[in-house]
Length: 318
View (spheres, rainbow, N blue to C red):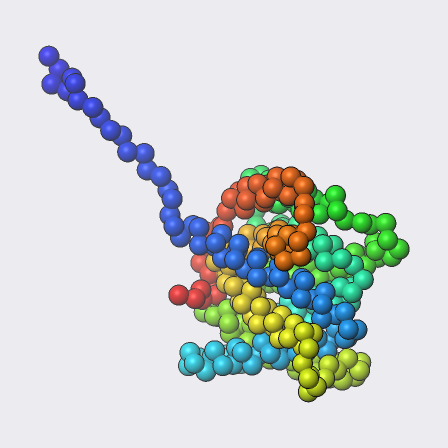
């Protein structure tokens, strides 16, 4: 008789479910929701006719002030070598000054939903740039993930977007300048960030340099926004946008260093989805079942676009 007869063998199948793999995805969902809320705020603060550069100035000023306080409590100093100054300048230009100028220019003329559609093109631009400079390799599953995200955007906003208004097409073309520069920034951060840079230091340095750039431009163009008067919801909106910008932007930079520019660019999908959901909750909007189908496509796309394994040059917060 076989001595092994009658025994039950249990084979353990190893499941590679490392919780660390879900951290970038969790941050992506959180930051996308925070970022999505700024679309509604942006629409509100441009409604008074303030010039783009004046709004960008205060966004950078409030951000720099908040970051300086954080740096003081942390006891950290801002690296100011020529290499770092050049890095801050490029990040300030392609990540804030140029894209936000065009966003504020068109925000008063197109619906918030169309602004969200424009932001959703960041992953497409990012992947094209990454492939062009050979920092990412073509992968059919990652491409499928991006296509699913794009499909989700179309399902959410395609049926509701009105492109028949006079001049709306031109404004949309101008709006697409912003996501193109965000894609450039994402790839630049992934490749050119100086070693051991904390995301808050990157944003702090870019905010300071951005202020240096924006101050003379704001004064020369007559775009100064006077905040010395009694504050209204517009001024509060400018402050809120600045704080949310620090939170979302620092987190975005961290994700770029951790998981790559293309994965980080998926935040654009979450931004659009959160904008729709906030509209339902806050504004009482209602949508068809296509919205929930879009949610499924969105989550599927995020799963397929897995973070690449890399050693980050950006210090992730602990």
